[in-house]
Image 1 (cartoon, rainbow, N blue to C red):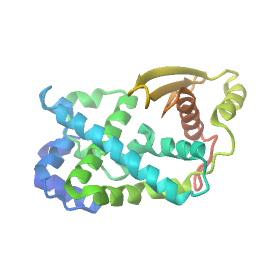
Image 2: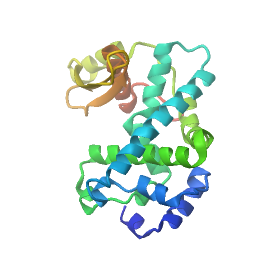
Image 3: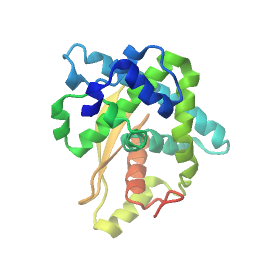
Image 4: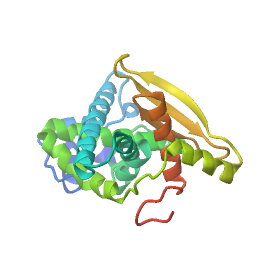
Length: 241
């Protein structure tokens, strides 16, 4: 992250050209998108949060559209499961690492001391900010091209979930930890007609996992699926199960 502090806006755009396939016209906006609030005044840090907000929506739209085209026979529950697995913080953090984004994030020195969970979230947030910058600079097609490049292979590699994730997690939890999954609602956001729930599930000594959904049950399923994938219970083609 320290490297990014020495990059000019033009140099940052050049460094991202090969990784995104897009030649940024507004390099100053790109630089703001990758400047964490810790490196700026409290007021100026609003930029980063606004980019992150927009990028999250653009990513969700493009991935949802991609999944509808790729899996024409999939039911809504399977599509939701796949979507959540592709846009959660862990997936975004991995893609950010894959393209070398962390070294381009401008952040304060205190970021180096963050716990790993918060570093995962920071990398995920930065990737969403980058997607927003792509969308604002080149329109939906620029964002779509980038997202398809890095998310499509992951979508194809995901194995189809054969069972309800909560049921699968409960059985695995008894075998692996002699415990029962504990679900906790972290937040409920949005209007009453279109809420978004965030749920965390914990199993014994294993790290908790988080999921989001438009109902409590959907969020719980997403959290259960995230834990199963992370722990290798649900395999991903091409990697160890």
